[in-house]
Length: 287
Image (cartoon, rainbow, N blue to C red; front, side, top):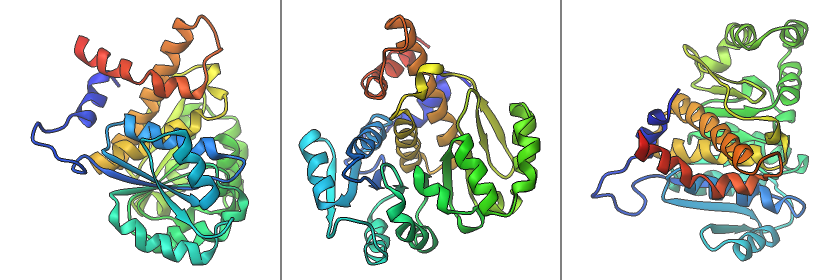
């Protein structure tokens, strides 16, 4: 992996017009987690897509508007996500190139997500707490960004708990091979798995990549929202699920490493990663 890999995803034609470099819909948020939506949305814009719309309850969407003028909002009626909202969002999502679901959403949105991921044919990224209610059998055309705990719960939901002892004792390479070999149905359904950890593992049906950028400071809240925002931003423009996942993982960790060095310690926060993504462009110019 090198910076030129990312540069290709971020390039755009000189004749580009608004919207040609990707449009993203992000569905999620709650009154307790407004920041998750905002971080993901801004990261998607920084990844190079042209338009980002966040969809949430009216209170949350207005809060996002107040926080940042760069994000468009769609205000759903009601205070929680419902199947009725999900039907509405499946139709609305047709306007966009890719959809990110789950950032800041609580388990109250389980039914919403179950309906949406089955009915929406759009390329999707799924992130957050709502993964704990799902199994690998339910997805198509999706990237899952999940941590070790979420992975274990999803394996149990998918009747794959027999894998857990092996996975807990495995290194990154062994873990990737076990998952690729035992999640064939999931991977053959045009899905990609991005497992977050000291070494990020990205798995498709015929490819495996490992990313070792990043550091212990990236356990702070919000860094996962930035990662999923970068993934969806790259995906909306490139339409390549595997490359988008690999590039986002690399860049998220690389900027985290630069912040660790420049701030002389672990005092950086998730929004610093977004603010410092401009350094990627400076690195591009040096190559």
